[in-house]
View 1: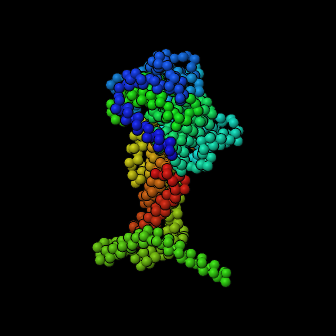
View 2 (view 1 turned 90 degrees about the horizontal axis):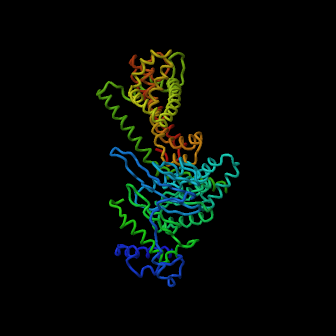
View 3 (view 1 turned 135 degrees about the horizontal axis):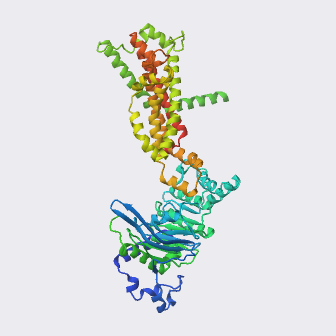
Length: 330
Length: 283
């Protein structure tokens, strides 16, 4: 329990510091950069050279071009919805290249088109102009190679935990023998720690367990890309942290590519290799992309002790709440 | 000795469990009985005080002919002269046929309409129009359109009870959460599997609601249909002929049968609903 207490205590400190100091203090304060280490590891803060700090940037502006050979390429994507009052531009010229095995988090205010972008990657929606490509293949419809972990779990409540996962395995690998499919289900439920609950109905298990089933189902079909739409938004703080750690462990074992929407900066900093920050809609763009250098495997307590953590966190907070503040309450 | 002791213990257990049962359900049993008795007493006094021409409830026993019907529900003197059990049984058989047809057509058509928005647009006004027609209004039409009285009676039941099944099934299919559809799309589930694993289970609570409303309507319709389609064995026509002959207490007895059967049918559907549907998705 102690790490949690420490953790939340620190967060409050930082939040108040941030609100008191709303300017871009990491650039205006000359000494501030001293605390940023070059490689993100702990204990290096004293030896950093001053001229490196100036060139070292926390975040890059949104890319204007893509690497055509990237694993997942969002190539100049625009999404426009026709409305009675004329065309409504949701996303305007999104460029993003994701490498194989990367963990990408997407952050931005509600209504900025994060989910629209995600839906074009999963194939539920298609771009008005531009293209989304996975390994060079344009994405036109949903498919099991881009499995989604839905915000509301999207499990079938009349089935057991096992049957929910089995339905996925059976649909994607109809030709595998029954025994093998059962084994895949068993293995993935064990991976998320649900062996005991395997025969329970979905309605009998908690929210955290439901999201575990959803993750097990998604991974059981071995997707090339795992898409998560705010997967832990509805969970309590402790369950959320447990699941983040499990997700990270599973990801490092599976080495799949992950694209995840989140509202939680701490979650993104703990999980992601890169944090994609979107500007407000309409006509949302990728504002900046922050690279998160913490070494893996990550340990939450150690990351929290790293001064760079707070630089990144404050930078992201500043991006969301000062530079691209949301006008209306969510 | 041992056996004795055993018996005593189980005896105490039995009376104890009886007591706890009574504590839990006593009110549920006593209060309805008080309600029904109160109703009957008021009716009895109203009749005795000549406030209404309707005979009192005790006439079911005091009237010789009705008493015979009350005591011998299984009698069969051939033709239309049968006990009330057989009259009800004949009506129930018609209801079963008409209701089964309504369930098949209603669920089938409901799924089609629910999954195909264009079909829905084409047929919805027609359905809304037809479902407003009372069972009695269908009787003359069906008597002309269909070859015999039996088929006409079954058709009237069908046409009365099909609408709630059809409309509820349509809504149930339309209300399948987008999340489930998205799962099916991303997993590229085959249409057959989608139908049995997602569509049917998801719409089932709505379908059952429709089926439960429909069983009541089907039973209402048989009475209406038989009253007009004279000359058939059935509880509806029994009421009609009793009324024609001014055997009012026989009408009362038949009404008790009708109410009881209607209640049993509804309880039966509720039981099925309870058995088949998981607790939380029941509507």
